[in-house]
Image 1: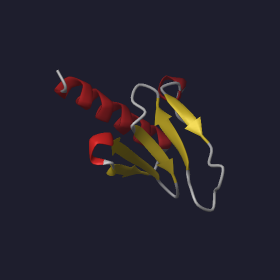
Image 2: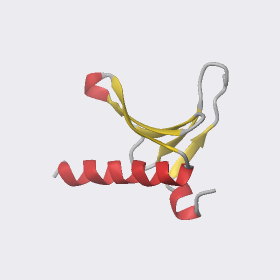
Image 3: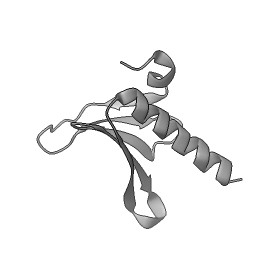
Length: 81
């Protein structure tokens, strides 16, 4: 289980239809970055102007996925200035 530092940075969203959709963790600082909970933890990023979701990475642990999602947001923040 990830430590609270990482877990507090995300909102856990349980699927209301597990046969169709996976649970996910959405990054509070950037709701376009989320972790899909499947047999692995998959980091995705929604790009509104392209109306597309991009695969950022796939991880064995939730903690690794959370670190990648936070880093992806930090990289976006640093390049947007």
